[in-house]
Image (cartoon, rainbow, N blue to C red; front, top):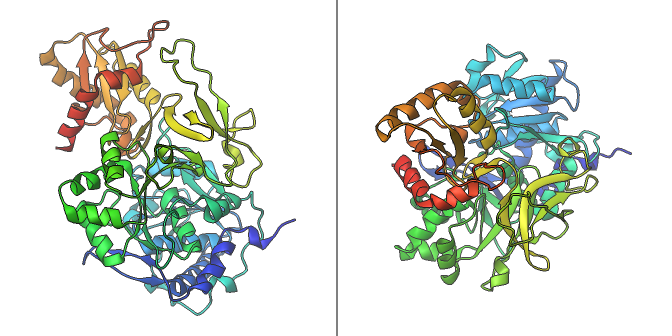
Length: 531
């Protein structure tokens, strides 16, 4: 039996009316480096008017409810949020793209894969309308229509099931040159709003102000905005994903920021600043909660922060599953271990290590999810065995308490997303087989990937070789995200044949062992590239 309440916006609508005078969003105004203020009541009317606009505009093109609509947006505007939610409230399925996408061919392929029927373009991407195979419409700003008095509660949301597709996102890395579609269901988003939001430890009294962690057109910021709003929190827009310490301090002062979600690499920057500046330390200590995610926090920075009473927690989440595990606020060693969030449906399956694995000191477990739980990923993402495999491995330190131990397979985690190392390595082998003996991609938890190659050339020739490798792989690079590309000769390091560590049985280069053996070289290369 269908029901209108299965739409995830049916959870948000009453909250918009419950706290009309609270601030829901603080858009960053880059020209003045200040923040505006949007109330819950304002957002309620904006979403309603946007829904009416899109229902009329898309229906006039012949689109039917539950058709997919691509939205290629900057992800940096409040209007982006409103247009995404408006398209959804108008009964369509938004498929989201941001400035991360620079290849129109890739966008067209992804729209074709989803069966999209129209494409909405921000003015920044309006030039792509000429070659589009779909009808295109401009993304409106508020001056394009008069905001009326109707609210989201006045609209009749589409009659849908909780397993129906709500929004289509994409993976943060490519597989064989293309991101994969990440369809999310109404039930998936609703469970995130209800019990998977991770920024709600510590003092909850009074005003809670948090931030967005990245593009508003990406899964992380989109869902956390919804969950924060569901709790009556305000979301202040970060000036940049990796905002400076000065920008963070300005945000604390101007917006009252007291809860922060941040990637670990950028948190390390703030911790090191706090070691030199008492004002920064005091600001970090005053947060109700700081959640770091993405990659592991530098152990020295983590220890210093805990000793200096900075209220940090670690979050394990993926684009496909959303938040799954967290540490808890506290100073005890067990507080720093991951545990499942209450209500999640995940379980752990014993992971059988490959026969030629040399480190067998710990028993590892893979997190998997069943197909029939409300918080499970979309059915299209499940394997033939009926489970969703995260491919993330954990060590159970104590019953119910875990430590993340890395990923299985060839996907490497960087600061900005995943990289399909096998695809990159295979392309180098194919295009540069006459130049290199063997290759391996490294750079776990770094801002960019690096390429280690075994070659016969002398050191004097290595600079020319790196340039030639980049020239040959350039066509492949064009379909990759920036963090997946080898585009600078300084990203390539050459070695004599047989230098890099290998497995005993098959003789394959061991990526983890290479990163450990050459940790200092990797750090030095990244420092030079950051220059």
